[in-house]
Structures are given as structure tokens and as C-alpha cells.
Amino acid sequence: MSGNRYGYPGHLEPWASFSDVEVNFLPMYKALHDAGYNVLAYDLRNHGLSGSGNGGIVGFGFEYRDIIGSLRYAETRLGLRKMRTGLLSVCLGCDATMVGMNRHPEEFEHVKTLLGLQPVSVRAFIEQASEVTGVPNGVELSDKAIHQWTGIHLNRLSPITHAKAVQMPTLLVQVRDEVTTKPSDVATIYDNISAKDKKLFWIKGTTRRCDGYNYLSEHPELMLEWFKAHMT
Image (spheres, one colour):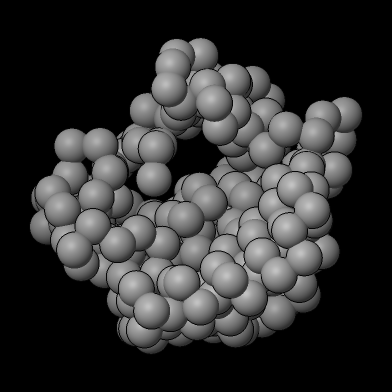
């Protein structure tokens, strides 16, 4: 996809054709750093400076291995090994984190909390796009094409069934009225999370998904309060 650990260059062409909003995660990282946290920010495979994998296929859950790899790497660093660990997982990264927790829960036993920023099911994106563009069979056509390409159907491209494996305290953050997907999708993901300590925070006043990605950079207090409450 078009993002990386910096964010998304929506202020530049050709990326502005998808969304003309620049997403900048750097202020979010700085807020965490200034609050005393160590930050390990990395690009998923097929993104940014990371290498390619899986034939360039993105978003099918393979990325959970990158999350596990980052956790293992942190445990090899002498200064980090005994520190508390929390996850700030964005969009596809949050989906992959939930897949990882379901497939390899032992890798996440030491993680104290998860903050998930706008996880999403691929089907919800396609359903919304089909409605907006007036394509009556857009979902069926997309499902057929993706299955022919990868052998995977749309219903498998979702964190909904994997969310049950999330047992740690979890905060999900989502634009409530965004036009590119269905808010009911993230609500279903949230409902399926097994953690007793969980919260869904709705971002209001915008319909743009990319405003949600910028929210914690512009309003870091929500993130800092959550981590302080669950990592100290």
C-alpha cells in the first residue's frame, strides 16, 4: 500500500488522488518519546524501507510475522529487555497484530496493552466503494478477482474472527462517520475482542479516514493517558 512508518504523502501527487490529506506519524512518536517511552517504529514488509515478501501481496495477514519479529528484536536489546511493552498498531498493522495474537498467543504474553488505530476488514472497504460508485456486484467481482489471484476469499481478509484472541487491555480509535468504510465494521471487531478492559473511541467532526490516522499526532493526550494507565 502507499503508507509507511512516516505516514502517507497525501499532499503530493499521485498519492493525493486517493486522499489529499498528509498523514504524519512523527509528532505521535515525539509525544511518546517526550513522555519517556522508547519507540520502535518500522515498515511492514513491502512498505517503505523494508524488503519485499509474498510476491508483493499486501494485507492478507502475512504481516503478523513482522509484528512478532519486532517483539523478538526488542527482547534482544539489553536496554529494552526488561522494560514494559505496549503496542500502537495502525490499520493493516492492527489487523496483522490480531492475526498474530490468534496464531501465536505465546509471542504476546508479555505485552501489557494494545492501542489499535482504525483496524479494518477489506470487505467493508469494497462494500462501501461499491455503494458509492453504484457498482451492484462490486463485492462479488472483487472476491472472484482476489481469489483467482491469491486463493483467498474476502471474508478471510478481516481481523473480526481473530479479535477474540485479544485479551490484553485494548483501546480502538476510529473516525465515526468516515466515507471509505463502514463504522459497523470496527464496532464488530471491538465487540469480538475478549479483553474485559476495552474501549472504543469515536473521532467525530470529519468524514475523512486519514484524519483518523493523524488524530494521535494532533491529540496525543488520549494515547498518553491510555498507556500511562496500562503500562505503569
